[in-house]
Amino acid sequence: MGKVRVANFTVSIDGFSSGLNQRMDEPFGDNTEGLHAWYESAMVERDSGRGGPEADQLQRFHEQAGATIMGRNMFSPHRGPWADESWTGWWGDNPPYHHDTFILTHHERPSVTMEGGTTFHFTSAPIDVVLDRAKESAGDQDVIIGGGASTVRQYLLAGLIDELDLGVSPILIGEGERLLTDDVAAALRDFQVVKTYPIGNATFYNLSR
Image (tube, rainbow, N blue to C red; front, side, top):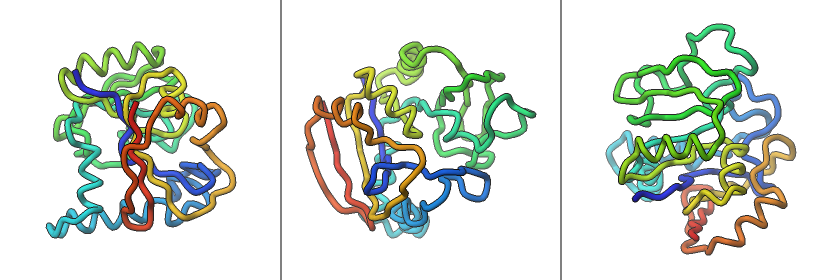
């Protein structure tokens, strides 16, 4: 059976994964410039065909991934009931997941099948029920808990995550959605730091139960 893991989740030094006022032109909100600089470099490395450690780290998200779970805020800048159902994510017609991807939301809507094999499922079911659905879809592969911070925090506090790749970027956000709250710090005591390594401007920590 595959693992339940968080891959390439990046926070600021003060523990935030996004700032205030997430919106269409600032998907991660205010004061987040440089948060994902390593990711942007990785995309350049990968698309140029050169490869390298940043591109390798980017690929870790996809290795053995059979299903993804993410929160509504990661999928969309819109809040509340869907004004319409034309929004199908930030990633264009061919999202990078290529498998069943479950969106946690209070406002369900019909599933959407995209190019490349990604199907977005919108669900208000409890997180353990969603995880069971994702595991069934993933088979022997891993289930990725994709973010944002609220989604990762819920699964961590429920003891449902096996492995975590956490990147820390050298910026301060100050306010927004925080992953590293006191209760998360307590939950992380069940993990061991397996590896620490630099990727671009970030320091990565691989943690495992």
